[in-house]
Amino acid sequence: MPDNDVMTAARTSAPASAPRPGLRERKKLKTRLAIREATYRLIREQGYEATTVEQIAEAAEVSPSTVFRYFPTKEDIVLTDEYDPLLEGELRDRPADEPIVESLRHVLRRAVALGFAEEPEVSRLRTKLMVEVPAVRSRMLESMSVTGAILCRVIAERTGRDAGDLEVRAFSMGLIGALTETAAYWAEHDHEDELTALVDRTFDMLTSGFAGTPSG
Image (cartoon, rainbow, N blue to C red; front, side, top):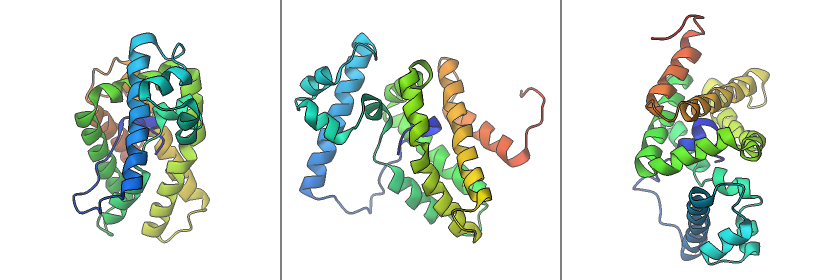
């Protein structure tokens, strides 16, 4: 998914029972990861603006055309991951009678915890770029519809509504917007807080409403 919002920091791991992908898919994933890792390394060394696609291609040992075949823009290298299908699957696996907000809290909180445990520096870098680089922020906002459509489908199935209903769409995109601001808050405060705690604060607010008084 586009790692927009907390989605920017959240990455889920494939379940142990998931079938092993074929050789072709493994090679494609290896190439995508090499491009990403080269991008993160170069950005850390010289900054986002100074990092070019040509430099990324050389560092990843691929051609610039290969980079563009996997990622339409430089911003997509930072934002895109492979995990939207897993997010959707985990939401579908939650108990059918569980309130949808709690299902979402459980899945996203777990995703955030796993993603940060696996790649803490990447999580910090991606959210930092989201806040500091207008092009990354803009591209992230453009890509929100992908994850929003997934949430709409799952929420519609759980509630018996149509995925195109205004209420379903407004709730889904409202949630994504709230998590975007959660990730931005985390980055703006130098990643001092525990991200899972911030996710819980956000879901508490969505569940109980905005109290209008300072927390803590």
